[in-house]
Length: 119
Image 1 (cartoon, one colour):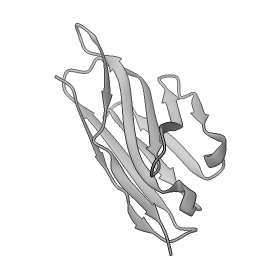
Image 2 (cartoon, helix red, strand yellow):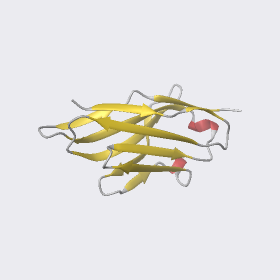
Image 3 (cartoon, one colour):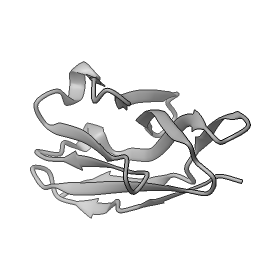
Protein backbone atom coordinates (compact mmCIF):
# COMPACT_ATOMS: atom_id res chain seq x y z
CA UNK A 1 0.00 0.00 0.00
CA UNK A 2 1.31 3.44 -0.93
CA UNK A 3 1.01 6.37 1.44
CA UNK A 4 1.60 10.07 0.91
CA UNK A 5 2.55 12.57 3.58
CA UNK A 6 2.87 16.31 3.14
CA UNK A 7 4.76 18.75 5.32
CA UNK A 8 5.52 22.44 5.36
CA UNK A 9 3.08 25.28 4.97
CA UNK A 10 2.09 27.89 7.51
CA UNK A 11 1.67 31.63 7.84
CA UNK A 12 4.04 33.95 6.01
CA UNK A 13 4.12 37.63 5.16
CA UNK A 14 3.86 38.83 1.57
CA UNK A 15 7.23 38.51 -0.13
CA UNK A 16 8.25 35.64 2.10
CA UNK A 17 9.12 32.04 1.29
CA UNK A 18 7.91 28.59 2.22
CA UNK A 19 8.87 25.09 1.22
CA UNK A 20 6.38 22.23 0.92
CA UNK A 21 7.46 18.61 0.91
CA UNK A 22 5.74 15.42 -0.16
CA UNK A 23 6.95 11.92 0.73
CA UNK A 24 5.62 8.72 -0.77
CA UNK A 25 6.21 5.38 0.92
CA UNK A 26 5.34 1.77 0.23
CA UNK A 27 6.01 -0.67 -2.58
CA UNK A 28 6.69 1.92 -5.25
CA UNK A 29 8.31 0.87 -8.48
CA UNK A 30 8.34 4.34 -10.00
CA UNK A 31 6.65 7.71 -9.81
CA UNK A 32 5.57 9.02 -13.20
CA UNK A 33 4.26 12.43 -12.24
CA UNK A 34 4.33 14.49 -9.08
CA UNK A 35 2.25 17.63 -8.85
CA UNK A 36 1.11 20.34 -6.49
CA UNK A 37 -2.40 21.75 -6.55
CA UNK A 38 -3.93 24.68 -4.70
CA UNK A 39 -7.47 25.25 -3.51
CA UNK A 40 -8.17 28.80 -2.45
CA UNK A 41 -11.13 29.78 -0.27
CA UNK A 42 -14.32 29.14 -2.20
CA UNK A 43 -12.40 28.08 -5.30
CA UNK A 44 -11.74 24.87 -7.18
CA UNK A 45 -8.51 22.93 -6.89
CA UNK A 46 -6.10 24.10 -9.57
CA UNK A 47 -2.70 22.91 -10.75
CA UNK A 48 0.25 24.89 -9.43
CA UNK A 49 3.14 22.86 -10.81
CA UNK A 50 4.03 19.34 -11.87
CA UNK A 51 7.17 17.42 -12.72
CA UNK A 52 7.49 14.23 -14.74
CA UNK A 53 9.90 11.34 -14.42
CA UNK A 54 12.03 13.01 -17.08
CA UNK A 55 12.20 16.19 -14.98
CA UNK A 56 9.96 18.08 -17.37
CA UNK A 57 8.00 20.70 -15.47
CA UNK A 58 4.79 22.60 -16.05
CA UNK A 59 4.01 25.64 -13.93
CA UNK A 60 0.86 27.73 -13.72
CA UNK A 61 1.37 31.18 -15.19
CA UNK A 62 0.61 32.77 -11.83
CA UNK A 63 3.63 31.14 -10.18
CA UNK A 64 6.23 31.15 -12.95
CA UNK A 65 9.49 32.64 -11.77
CA UNK A 66 8.45 32.37 -8.12
CA UNK A 67 7.81 28.68 -7.43
CA UNK A 68 10.13 25.78 -8.18
CA UNK A 69 9.09 22.13 -8.16
CA UNK A 70 11.64 19.37 -7.70
CA UNK A 71 11.78 15.65 -6.96
CA UNK A 72 14.18 13.07 -5.57
CA UNK A 73 13.45 9.70 -7.13
CA UNK A 74 15.88 7.88 -4.83
CA UNK A 75 13.79 8.94 -1.83
CA UNK A 76 10.36 9.15 -3.53
CA UNK A 77 10.02 12.71 -2.35
CA UNK A 78 9.14 16.01 -3.93
CA UNK A 79 9.22 19.65 -2.95
CA UNK A 80 7.70 22.95 -3.91
CA UNK A 81 9.85 25.97 -3.11
CA UNK A 82 7.68 29.06 -2.99
CA UNK A 83 9.31 32.49 -3.08
CA UNK A 84 7.94 36.02 -3.33
CA UNK A 85 4.63 34.83 -1.94
CA UNK A 86 1.53 36.89 -2.52
CA UNK A 87 -1.80 36.98 -0.65
CA UNK A 88 -3.45 35.32 -3.64
CA UNK A 89 -1.21 32.28 -3.08
CA UNK A 90 -3.23 31.54 0.06
CA UNK A 91 -4.96 28.20 0.08
CA UNK A 92 -4.68 24.53 0.86
CA UNK A 93 -1.90 22.88 -1.12
CA UNK A 94 -2.22 19.25 -2.12
CA UNK A 95 0.46 16.93 -3.42
CA UNK A 96 -0.61 14.46 -6.11
CA UNK A 97 1.49 11.47 -7.10
CA UNK A 98 0.90 9.05 -9.97
CA UNK A 99 3.05 5.98 -10.37
CA UNK A 100 3.24 2.24 -10.25
CA UNK A 101 3.72 -0.47 -7.66
CA UNK A 102 4.94 -3.95 -8.75
CA UNK A 103 1.39 -4.94 -9.65
CA UNK A 104 -0.73 -1.84 -10.29
CA UNK A 105 -0.89 1.82 -11.15
CA UNK A 106 -1.74 4.27 -8.39
CA UNK A 107 -2.75 7.89 -7.99
CA UNK A 108 -2.80 9.49 -4.56
CA UNK A 109 -3.57 12.85 -2.97
CA UNK A 110 -1.82 14.14 0.11
CA UNK A 111 -3.79 15.32 3.11
CA UNK A 112 -3.30 18.98 2.21
CA UNK A 113 -1.38 21.71 3.98
CA UNK A 114 -2.54 25.26 4.62
CA UNK A 115 -0.54 28.18 3.27
CA UNK A 116 -1.60 31.64 4.39
CA UNK A 117 0.08 34.75 3.03
CA UNK A 118 -0.89 37.77 5.08
CA UNK A 119 0.61 40.74 6.81
